[in-house]
Image 1 (spheres, helix red, strand yellow):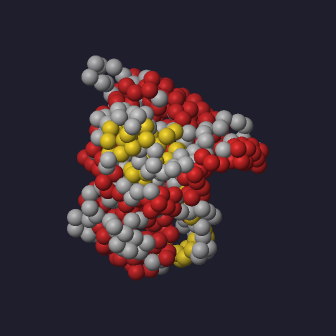
Image 2: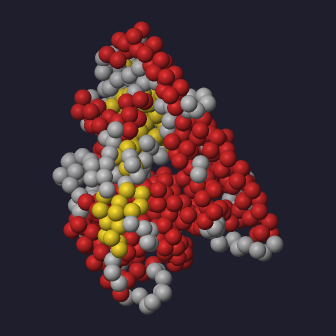
Image 3: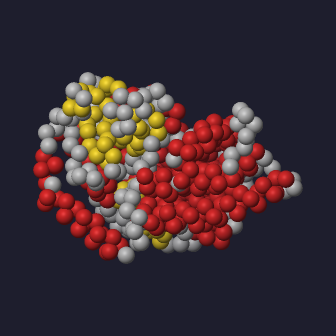
Length: 480
């Protein structure tokens, strides 16, 4: 089916390319209603520059699409066509600040049609549920609410390493970090930690992630169709879990504060209304993807960079061993312990700078407005890219160098380090991600040193960065 899909797409592209080739060479200066649009080009009819946008990630260099056009057209904003939509890419700290600061004033959140199809409640008919969600989530993810989950995270992490790492000579890192973060998300979000049940639920998630930012061609065998089918399967399973939890809450077998599922079921809006069961299942599905895919990528790249940079590993090891020695035998990690992991978090931040799981996100112009002298028409889709600052020497000198000291003191300038987005739509799970990454690092370096088995393994970004072969490593356990 993959070959069939590729053939259909290739035929489509070749057919239009010969007849409409001149579209690629339109002047970079265009006007609309007498107003100058941002410089750029829209690429092929219908599909625009979507394939170029995605393919630079497939070859491991998603920043190439951005920097090539920043150099050719404008380092501030350029015009393109992505995901079947007219689009403008806002670049640099200035662009990030503008989009993050004008949420619900000039712009609003937007997802490609592929996301609306995989998550039907993400469309305009469920805007009210999205508003409820954004009001409710911060209560669950705020630091004081997460304090009590640190020992739970520690217990799950210890079990994970005992099951999948201990006694092994070699492991495939990315498979294990996906297993770890999904197991943890299931425990924290829906209170499921049975390994077989977790494994059963985890199977379809890779198809969902690949389908989310695929070209929305709904044919058998396409990534888009596989994503839809996988999401429907998981959604049905989650609906059963939601219904059972409602019964358990009514019968006193579950508490309102035990996890985010219970929190959603008892949450009331200003009018006393509850979230619909279907929307809860859909939002839990989104949280499982967000809490699993992004952190699993970050953890895998931490393993990668610590293998490549022994002096960085030594700094993390020293910090984590000092914390370990302060604990009584069997004592679990707590919030104060994680607060001491300052160097380790600087290392994690540098990993997030070089390999951001969230490459960027879309907004939609809700009115006509001017930006840097250019007209942005209502309805245009606006994209910000983490790489336009993360790998830009204007904001990070020697941007390819791994340097955790960038995050000492006040750290990077505002709107330059954006692995979790920014503004009202900043990822509400930022603090949750920090905790799970640090607990993972603590047990990883306490137990092992390691080396990469494929020294020059390629990186693929689709839609998040991942090692092409899963980052196989050889383990060297520490002697007690």
